[in-house]
Image 1: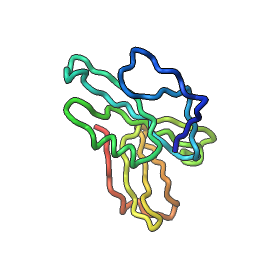
Image 2: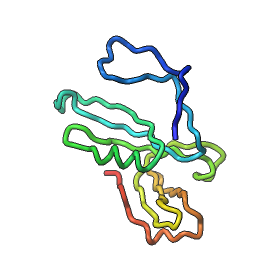
Image 3: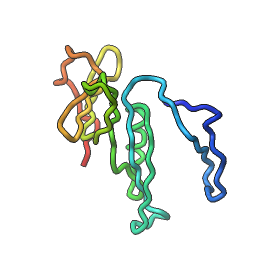
Length: 141
């Protein structure tokens, strides 16, 4: 989950017509994976004027919600998995292109297997869990 502080709030820009709040920074409350997502849309529905916006999404539920909102004029065009070292087997965070998201049945609730463009897989499930029962929830391309 992300959070921020009132001190991080930036002043409104007069050119922004949307009802938005801008922040200088956000903080992550858990040492967990998250997603950096590129969402593209056609300005005023015109495919000649493509705009892009990036979203920082803290969980799979939020990611899938944005993906379900895809239409002919607005769509997710890229997903990066941002994984902590304990998940990716290193001592640092990594941001890698997500190629597959696989749901794994678990007694503890929803668990996931992430396949990145390099072919590596990362998981939030224990090593003794069977991936064979998994179902592809999302695949790039």
